Length: 509
Ligand SMILES: [Zn+2]
Image 1 (tube, helix red, strand yellow):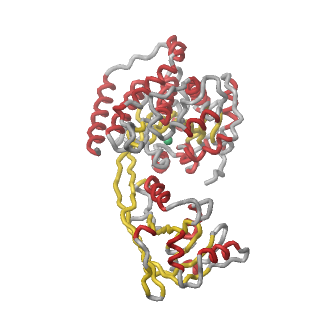
Image 2 (cartoon, helix red, strand yellow):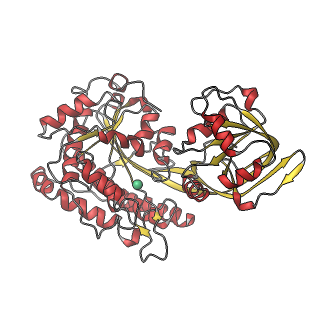
Image 3 (cartoon, rainbow, N blue to C red):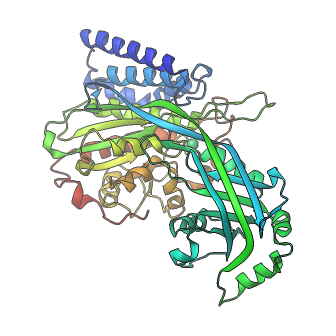
């Protein structure tokens, strides 16, 4: 698979060089209005290619990636973009290396006063965020619900903190205990969550950029019944511990049980790429505008024996990269802008916004010079004329200018309170963490009823394919508005200042 990607990449660069030698005819100005009438059709054509069977669900590191990047790079090259990596060794395609970690083995042994206690291997799940972690013969310390509770390091050090999962599982509590010094955390699944739920979640969440540190956190999960067995003869029962934890003056209780926990993970590396193109501006010192859409999807995501297991991601996010490409086409026409405009098709959004993080970790320009960034994700939702939402409203200094440009161009702004619930679920959130002022400006979240219906329906399922009726009127509106916003923010008279004053400094993390 890897070799396929690299071989194809070499062919793509070959094609790019060949194209550079052929003059690309400029589009006559008179054709623009007609082309805009055809915008929905153009978007549909891109989506039909990117969500076709041949692209196999656009999974990072596969032939589906190679085909996707070849298609997009060819489009962008023909439009007139240049490589935006600013790295002569990696034109157009910025490498992103991802480590996939899957739980390999875990074991738990419990003793009381030197006596081994019998626990079946499947009854305790032990997981680590690192390669291999172990804690040997550590006492259990029952910390109750550990909500908004401060522990002293000496209290937790060398001990396994036993926490109640409760009705609303929240991994922040476990993480807090580990950062406060616990050797490991043992979560008693006393609420709705089961061991199978935890296994399923962890299998999906085990991706990270290869540069990120591994950590070696050790976490274990245990069901109610097994915990009861462990407590036998200690003078405690789970019910008595739960009662104690409910008291206002609760203090942690040392249990007469020691644990030896060990876990290992199996690692594989995925070599994948962000695609970065650029329209060079007149004034290289004036900063830049950035447009973003993730190209990746899951590959397979359906469960056998279902007839269809490939997830083609037509709406999520073939529609977004289609819109990104058509914004690039429109901005490439007309007079050269003052600022550079970057176009970024990210990888591994579905694995945890990893491509966007990689871009910000290793940016082609100092990130503080990005005046405004616009993410485009799953835009084939609403019909033409739907009001415009700003996802990330209030988190940047961009809202006022966006509203002004939208109104000037005849768009209505939505009352988008609910849309903010989704701000953390898109690449813009990763960029915000790196202080790049990023929003989604879109009709898709301007009609939350339709967006919710998508999330409850085909989203992240094989049904997000070309067979579903695809509404592209709103997506075409998005392209028109984003093009206007690109021109506005790339204009040093309209937006004279550098990014610093156009952003707020306090983004919630
Ligand atoms: Zn998605």
